[in-house]
Length: 156
Image (cartoon, rainbow, N blue to C red; front, side, top):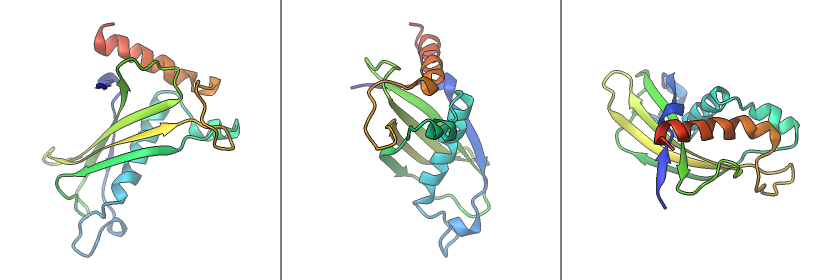
């Protein structure tokens, strides 16, 4: 199945690796990239009109069910990075499905070199962890923005 990035919805954040995120060599510890992905995804969702904390109040959860990271070059302590998050859709996927795939890129802010790439998949569940097949009302802004981006990015 083919995947397509909705580039018009790409969100970026700037980070400076903290000392606590590195090993003794000053290189960012590999697991911290997933935390950075989470921060970029939260920023993207905010732009898309989704408040995860509010959704939790209504009894919904948004767990990660898949993650993938490819390490190309290390990020170092104190060297600014840019983390981008962009939603990805599958061929034939309707935006009413309670699932979100996001692709990430971490680049050096100075050189723009690609450091790390990755992807996560989140699903929406009820408070007991039961997978929802349709988007709850509080996630409808997400579906609307994804639909609009599909039309814009792919001239549907």
